[in-house]
Length: 314
Image 1 (spheres, one colour):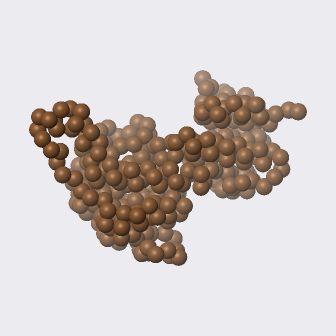
Image 2 (tube, helix red, strand yellow):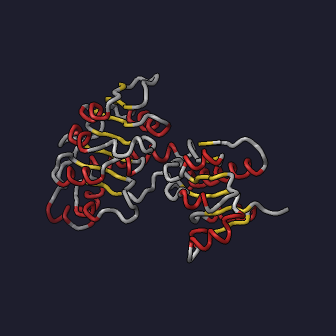
């Protein structure tokens, strides 16, 4: 039987590459020397695209695949996929929610603790010999018992809130509407920032949420506040963030996502009040295996004529 043709936008771990290669005729876009010529050659064969939340699928790529039926995303974010074009052409889109929720929430907590307790700097203090030569490391700030704000109370935001509850924190959140939770609903992001010591950004990215965390929100957070972003870089106005970090308009930031990553703005590297992570929210063996399995299960379901497991659009 002829294998369905799948356009693979980026590389995957071997545990996904092997079963994908066995089940499908893969066309590896990321390995093409001339992507446009490559698409012109294979695009008409392609029935599905396998991609990631970061790489997505542009309008140009979608248009180059006239027989495209499905875009399967390895990741929860779908803002890099041209959903309008997909809906107009009846192209289904799937992602991999739930399986990465716990790890992303764990990293948010780890980033909070690393930033407030300055664990990275403390490790460097020991390794450099400063502990022996200069004495105790400067005191840091506590995490427990403080006021937390969560911008976006979806799966990940809710998981963060549950974890923060164990720290005895006073939790508030912003969302489209109030939810049945013990936490305080504050619809306005500026007001949420004003009552927060630590602001977590956990909402899905869209045109409506672009730069939802702007200079006003950051100023409302104030010089004692910190911000933690494990969502998408576009949710924060990066220029405003850099200005307020440099001027100590806010106390600090912990970031797992950046504009134009991995080529982040070099100004971040000059700041000592920011914790930088290389977009590793879901990067554990267990979660990446589960993400790959769910992506492949959606592909399998589609080509078997079965309902998609985790559709974004159908």
